[in-house]
Length: 124
Image (tube, rainbow, N blue to C red; front, top):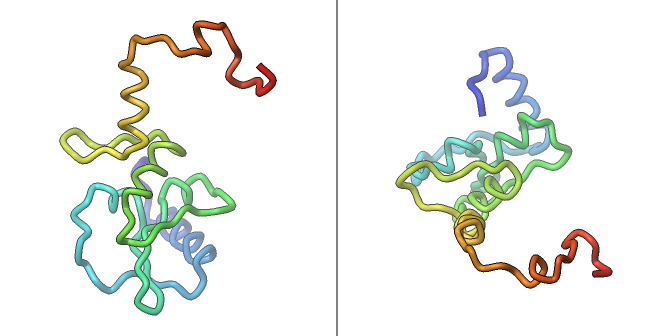
């Protein structure tokens, strides 16, 4: 994700609140020490606090991923699966990233590779 200019930042915020009508910036600054908050907007409505994905807003996606502030592991999985955004060095990785790295490190062949099957063809 790249740095944004003030005019572009306002445009992104307008887009955010277009998707989340009735929501506002979160009034509480508690528990925003996680690296995930750098990649999401902190919004709230009626006491419910959410993380909304900045990359989804930047990409002008029709549906913006959002997760409750208490479920940030789901946000981490979203960042890895949808945007390939890894956890910074020394920070807790998402389960999706850990599984992906484990698969990459494994030298053991899969059944599909041994049988030379195309995993994208469900008939095989």
